[in-house]
Structures are given as structure tokens and as C-alpha cells.
Image (cartoon, rainbow, N blue to C red; front, side):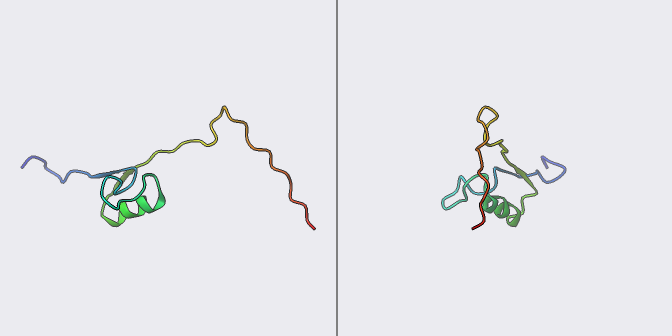
Length: 65
């Protein structure tokens, strides 16, 4: 026996991006598919958007008619 315990399988950015018909990385569908397929760990990428160098958009208040 190589391992005393079962190895942990981690879903990199979710599940199935490298398989035919797989899910797009870093999507809710990909994360849910990972859980449905028994993965207990999911590695995901979180990015701040917009980047700090981009000023936030100016939002104009809605006018009631």
C-alpha cells in the first residue's frame, strides 16, 4: 500500500475543463459538477474587477417618470 489514506482529489478551477464536453473553468456549473462527482476540494481563482488601476464606472441615478 502506497498511501495510508485515500489521496485527496482537488478540482482545479472546478470540474471537467480538460474533458470533452467539460465545463468552463471558474463557473458555478463547474463547481457544482465537482461536488456532484465527489470532489471535496475545489481550487478557484478570484480576481478583483475592475482592477484597482481602472476607475469605477460613473452611475447616473435613475429618474422616476
